Length: 392
Image 1 (cartoon, one colour):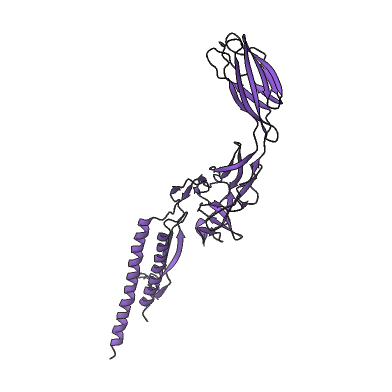
Image 2: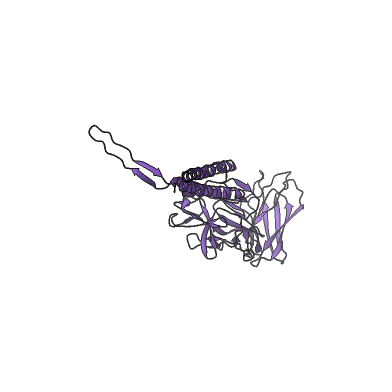
């Protein structure tokens, strides 16, 4: 039979593969983190009809004569260029700016992904749409122990930060120098004991000449007194006043005494009640920071990223994930922003990097290539028909 028949068949098969790959790219144009693929062709072995001849005296050399036997798919490569960012506003949506892959656990297997659409499951673990669990380093008492074995990133939805007893408070502002003797100003603040129970601490300022007498009392009946004396220029006269009420040291050293301004107030106090986790944010370095009801901010974990010497050697495992192969190299783990790894952007997803204009052009090229190879077969068939017609 004619060799051209089999060359045409190989062309049909190869261009059908190109159509399949291009169709899959177009089908995934809106798939989060999808990376487009491209087909490379190569010719098959060629039949040697005439070998090369060496140059002789008076005769030039001759080139070999070979007949190709068709085409093969040399490989299907994956394009890992960055996709565009799509803002979602969801705290659990994440995208990688730069190189790297999320590390996921799926059915006991470690897989890798660029798709950062995550949600907490019933156990508080961050999982992808297919159930793969995000991996990283969880924090212990707000400290991330990076460098150890990876574990499931878990958002501790019922975690509680401990209460802190109030031991110090600060009063700042101005006491009016032009106030009449006997005028009073009352300021109060909530302070906390070691269990987080709140009580009110009240300071009463009473004007007496160039001095303001300060009486402190809390709701438990504990009291304390002090005096704030100002110099003629409105600054505090030494020594700095000291006031202690129920174990709370009140700092009065920043007060001033100018006329016409009344701004004295509690600036801060160092105690707090126990707090529960209300929400969390994602930093560029992959640290997940929990925001607690008492105002605390505490790291709850850090997301790990992986990179490979040859990302093109990864094998697609379905669900927008990849698995390592012998030609991808082993995964090199690290935190976002370290050792060439990209940073993380919360509230956004990486869109597919499929270029529709290129893919539709590839469709036309594949279609015409398929048609041309089909024409090879029909032409070869016509030649064979002519041969069979020689004998009637």
